Length: 271
Image (cartoon, rainbow, N blue to C red; front, side, top):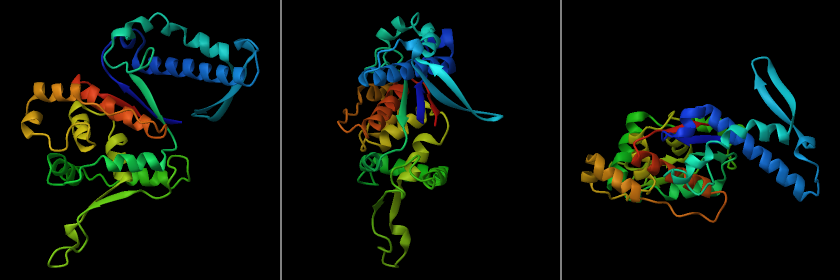
């Protein structure tokens, strides 16, 4: 269980199969490979048609369990074979062998990954990124309520039972003792702006790239004001690979935001 997302760059596989079918087939292939690998590592050398496991499906009638063989999943994913060659030259394939425009982030989100995201927010709220961040939170009302509700469901979605937070300034720091002198963002709000706004448009992806340091926090406003210049900056932007396996999927998501915005396409979110 996790967050699935697709960089919606038009391509022959998406045209032939449709995004939803493409994702389901990639999932089937990945699941078959995982079960087969675990079986072989455990000394089980039965053929794929004899390796079975139970899947749980949520249907309108309730939860349904079904026995599935590895071979069934392999057969289900067979239509991918005719399409995979198109991925070789795809600019959003990433480092995948094929179909790298589809990626996922597993639950639960680790506390280290939440801290890493907070650490990428601007240090200075008077920077370009800081000014856009404070304005966006006020304009869109990102309060993190849905993420907070998810967090309340034990450790299913988040490792930490409390949101982490970063604060700029000090509460009550003004001469009149007004608490408005401090500004705080927590990881429930971060999760909302990343994953709970629906599919991510190129404009929103650009803003997120700015907030989380994929683009420089002090980026000249003239760059944002020119579509061509901004897309060139996004195409050149990168996020280094993270050695921590808990963090790298989120680093990959930030890379995907820049790639999508550079190509003027949406990131489709299914969380």
